[in-house]
Amino acid sequence: MRVSVVHPKELGEPEVSRWRSLQEADPAFDNPFLSPEFTLIVGELRDDVRVAVLTDGPDLVGFFPFERHPMGIGKPVAAGLTDAQGLVHAKDIEIDPHKLVRDCGLAVWEFDHLVVGQPLLPARHERHPSPIIDLREGWDSYVATLKENSGKTYRSTLYKQRKLSRDVGEVRHDFAIKDAGPLRTLLGWKTDQYRRTGRSDRFARPWIVALVERLLATDTESFAGMLDMVYADGRPVAGHFGLRTRTTLAGWFPAYDTAFAKYSPGLIHHLAMAERAASSGIQVIDMGRGEKEYKEKLKNGEYHVAEGRVARAHVGAGVHWMLRVPVRKARSTVLASPMLRTTADRTLKAYGRIRTALSS
Image 1 (cartoon, rainbow, N blue to C red):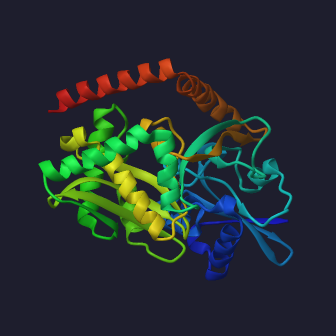
Image 2: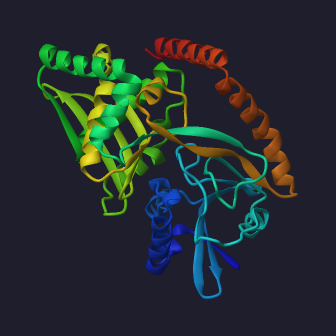
């Protein structure tokens, strides 16, 4: 097996088509973050993106997208943003992950949302649930499950939607829209949320804004940016921007106008989005790894993703271990404990309030 490392812009149509066919041949790869289009668009904005192209004789058998950083440190494409990572490959191929890392010119490759079952999965790793809304049995079946498992949430969300309509005006849901205006509104809400909760504002980085805009403009049968918004009396209330394949919608950036918080606009939006997604052929909404109350209320299944690293004997791998592994272990400890997680969340929100007050 041979490995050739190229920049995404060097991939031709035969390679992109083969990548897409390998992805669609295995349900494990049915996530837009593993689509060739995602890597190609990120590659337009970042010089550190590479793709390892694996060939066995005359056959293209795999595509491994990654970022190459100083000292041979490798990360997933758009690290910190993606909810599915890994190698898209033909079935039954044998891959030595350490050799692949070496052939890519890397000392280490770290991951936090690796698709479980990958040949890249090292013996030592952590697994985390990634909640989903499973629509494969249809919308009515999902609603029946939701009523059984989260009946109070379902009923209260419908009640609050009716109240929103009475208090403010007609509630409308626009699905799969391409207007940049609503996108800017959504990103503004998201920036406010990051600041309010003490998190780093991703949209303070121009390349991420440009990425989202380019993804919104992309619309093919196998891959597209998906924006949808809920309005009350014509005023935007809540929305979401994500990505889709033919059958999977990846949740990415949901947000809402806090002026309508008492109506639970996020839940109103998610139910509306799920219903429209089901009618458009989406079978799974992957809400992504993370402990969020709304995910627990809405999920009716889950996938698993892995966190860890593949490293070889190299000084860069040693530096990476000192800088990253203790921090990752500490974070995992906090996230695994409800008490520590709640304390950390409160601390971040307090920091966010102080930061907002100082900047006003």
